[in-house]
Image (cartoon, rainbow over all chains, first blue to last red; front, top):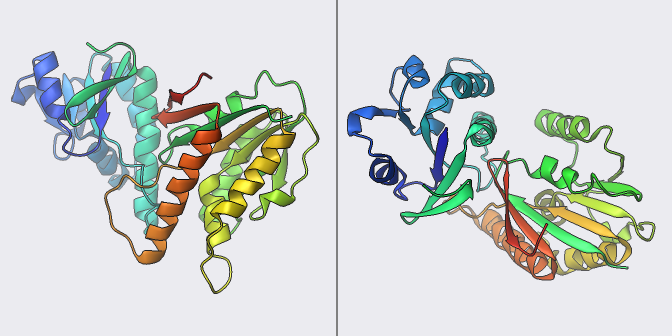
Length: 130
Length: 174
């Protein structure tokens, strides 16, 4: 598994396409894809949005991530870092933000490489850059 | 005495606490955990409970101190884990009618603890990267916390950023 992280609009998807050669149709959009499709997808984009959707279904994102890591070991997961701000006022926002953090820790733990994109520039967080 | 000081920063749920605790696994002296979170509200209780459970069996004695960490006297040569700076700052700033500027007092408190400790780890938060402009009070809080983080990083032997559970050394060596 490979994980690509960073702030919004830093060039994460572009990086995945350039480095791993994904075509647009091979990249699932976590915001609207069929949730079960992630277990066989080559690449899942906006994974933080997928975590949100799992939450809305009252399912446990942590368990979902553990299953994903078990069943789709070759996936490239792209997600935003959302935890580096002020604690949100709304309880539901707080729970969601924490869920994205916990989910990210599971994906990172199971990834051989974690790459953070900053202004389009890749930084190795775990493993060597491809 | 003044032993090694390590600063650990990162966003929400990035594994800062467990990493901070792991830095004491080979420490044989007396270990103290300074808990700064005010136990008010259901979420605070569950956070405190979660931290307590994670810490259980790791040999820390807990000191609950929500303000004035300079008043704590540690036995010479002990280990101390301060968690977390973000809560401590909020408790110091927003206590009473007027908003206070506690940075100097907090840094003095940290120096006081550091002088007694043989190993010190401070957990803080990275709160200034969500790009949202908040009200004046919150902006002042962000500014103060970021300034504290910079000043502590300056006097630290090691500074670490936790990213989704992975520690990235930003200064010195672990």
